[in-house]
Length: 181
Figure 1 (cartoon, rainbow, N blue to C red):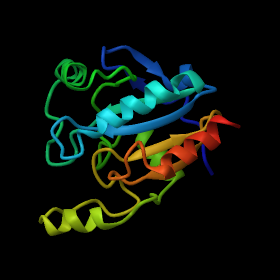
Figure 2 (figure 1 turned 90 degrees about the horizontal axis):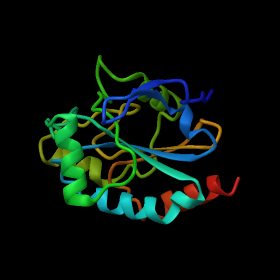
Figure 3 (figure 1 turned 180 degrees about the horizontal axis):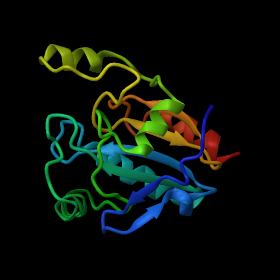
C-alpha cells in the first residue's frame, strides 16, 4: 500500500525543520544527489526540467546522500554552494541524509517500501559491477540519482534507475500523466 510522504520530517539545506506537507497538491520528483559522482552532471537536466515544469505543478526535491563511495562528502553549505555555482540549481535541496543502510532516513524507507522495483534496470548495474563496485540489491537504492515520482496525493507512483536522465521519455511521460490528473 502506498502511503503519503507528507508527514515525514525533513530538514532543508538551510537547516529548517519541515515536512513535505508544503508540497501537497504538487507532483514531486525526489532524487538522491551527490556532487562528486559520475552522474553529477544530471543536475543540469534536472534543473532544466524543473524550470520547464514548475509552473505546471512539478517540484524536484534533491536529497544529498553520501552513501555511495563517499561521493557527497561536503557540509550542507558546501553542497548548496557547489550546486549554485556549478549548476545554478533553483529546485529545493535538503540537508544531507542517508538513503541506504542501517541509518536510512524514514523518507527513503517509505519511498523504497512503496515502489521496491525501479524502471530502467539495465546495463548501468553491470557497469558498476564491472568497475569492481558492489551496488545495492533491490529493493535498496542502487546509487546516486535514483528518482522517485510522487503524485499530488503524496503516493509514490514510479521509481527510476540512476542512469535514467531527466529528459528520458519514461520520466517525462510519467510526470505528464501525473500533472494532468
